[in-house]
Image 1: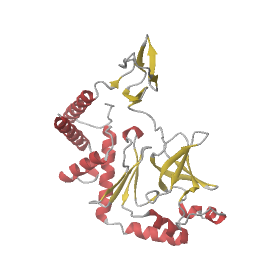
Image 2: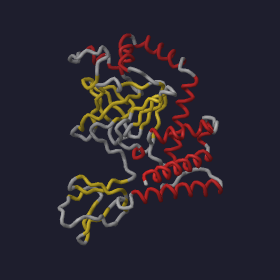
Image 3: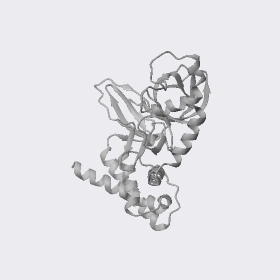
Length: 321
């Protein structure tokens, strides 16, 4: 477990340390054979021909780990997946980014990567929804769709020759994100899952877990294509309407957005993997204790979340037995 920078009293330190030790013991029991540290020997069958992948090396006829992580096997390939690493994009990853530049026939996005990603004008649906060639008029209207500092959700399409990413947004679930909060967490806390878009129906909140460590929490939006179509009609009229709509976001929805966002912040501070189940557990815990939104960021709540997570994982382990 990594060091946690919190202002704790002696009792809270003991409770937190006990909860983290319990989580670590549960993890080691489940992954006793898979977890390795630097210079650990990776058990393999000498009869089988293997391919040594990332995080492995050969020493004295044995395959050893060069990084701390979990041993993964894909057919003959053996590699070590590091537990803490920078964002390594793959094709199909769901990412959340912020527009930093509107260039010729493309938008450049900051995505928490060593290079800015590129979203081509031809890689997204036009506001009118018609499949046609992009014209000079479409290029002139690019700022009416996305402009600087807009937050966008998209998908990794491929890699360019210089190593940068090319994105695509050819679905209604992709597009501009409004009326919410953009959070930044370490990318290794967001695991690749089948579903990264979550609609919390009971709270009227959308939660998008970007693989690049950008997480969006905002008011639920049914169709973003409709918003893009309105943007194309008249920029000034759209800006006025956007301001008016944001003022009409229900107070309870705003509170729910802030509560979900604070749950993500707490889990990120503790170093827990971010999944919908864990986020909702922290959300419900704060509601059960009748804590204010600002009280979720105090040290005591961090300790309570760690103890609750240790209890949850312990019960899951017992059920599997």
